[in-house]
Amino acid sequence: MLNIALFGPPGAGKGTQSKKLLEKYNLTYISTGDMLRAEIAAGSELGKEAKSIIEQGELVGDELIIQLIERKIKTNPDSRGILFDGFPRTTVQAYILEGLMLKLNSSLNCMISLVVPTEELIKRLLLRAEISGRSDDNLEVIKNRLKEYENKTKPVADFYAKKNKYYPLNGVGEIDDIFQDIVKIVERTKSVSQTNIVLLGKPGAGKGTQGNLLAKEFGLVYISTGKMMRQEIKEGTEIGKLAKPYMDKGEIVPDEIPIQLIERRINENPDANGFIFKGFPRTLIQAYILDGLLKRVNMSVSAMIDMKISTLEALKRLSARGRTEKARPYDGSTELIVHRLEQYKEKTNPVIDYYKNQGKYFSIRAERDEKEVFENLEEKVTNILHDSY
Image (cartoon, rainbow, N blue to C red; front, side, top):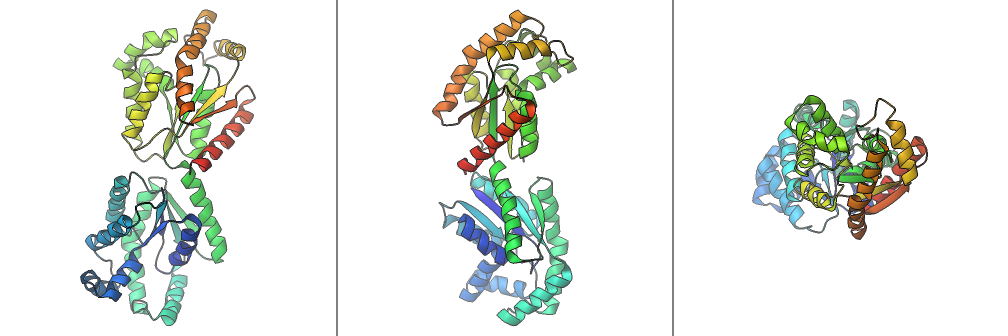
């Protein structure tokens, strides 16, 4: 699902931009203001309760708002996503929205805030009052609403900024220009939301270098089981002591070790858009394990990319690395390098077949220079994410 919150003070243009977003993305529209006014017009009990609060320019209680939102969501079970206009308006409502999204096995992609100077807001709202005759658009109420926004709603920006989901945008200018800026943000955030990429390839294929670059480019969290285990060994932890004999020989460590490390990393990043997995899964059993770990946080593997290099190129690269400060214990011996390559072929080829059968297998040639390989990977990931949406 594509879930967007359009944020900003009264008069910022959220309603105008919402109409354009709905037309482009075919989302379920949730405007708490519109829904409340509809209840008031219908003379419902909820509407009567809300009327006096709205006319004073104050915020309606969360209980009433949630009733309206849940009702609207239930009437659109097959929605491609939701556009929230005017919600969340407090930090408490932000937490409520997190819970609602969890119930839908989804999350908010982005909060886009239209930033407009106060003088311009007052001017717009007074003009709207003349045109629409809305009783809540007199000068006194306008000033009170803007004060409410400043005191209660702007902290919501901080809430989503900490999750790297808050995008402030200049709300003054041509409507179509502002809309195009909004679309750019939506396209970017919809691509990375809930994205999990597995990087596979022979030892020496460059997975570590490229995995770090991809994670940075797409706002994902990089998980390298080998790197984490080497850190555990360096620190002399119990996990490190268990892993060391296997790592020294270039063997696959027992599954309970990477499970602990991956689970820890995922738990440390509860708000991540997704992960780049390097060096895991290396066996079919580990592929099942990764599915289980991701399912616990309502995620799944989006794609597996096979970084292809020849056996001869792998031998050259690993032997060269063995003569640098980045050398692994198993890089100094041709016998160990060959063993690792044989083990990769035996253990990891079934993993490749596993992802092929799911339609999640992609490959690139990784024998080019680092910059060219990254450009190819970047293009591949962008296409994968676009097609998956």
